Length: 112
Image (cartoon, rainbow, N blue to C red; front, side, top):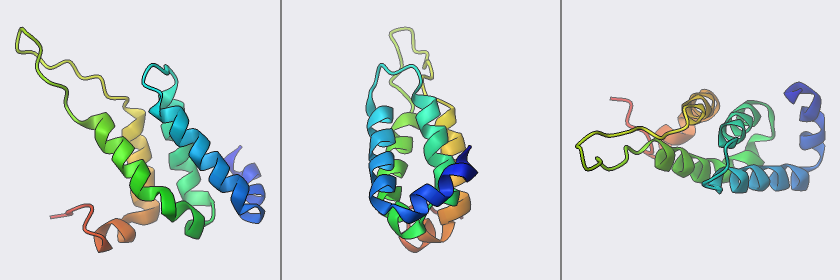
């Protein structure tokens, strides 16, 4: 499916920006049960759409992933119950495949 939409997003950068913003807003909805699909969609888009347009949103996406995987506070019994959507880690993996040099240049990720 993603390969079929690549030509559309390559030709129409406004449509690409609209799609990225829409997916980011979709992910930001806290009670949305399908937020993982948003993470997966963004991750897949990272490798196939126009880099110059997509790179403007990479920091916002990274911040969403970071907030998603931060451990929650311990409960009254001292246990930490993870609530992170694991699809966010898949999104991070796909972002790193396409934009690892961008993150390294900006010191957003320390590989050592």
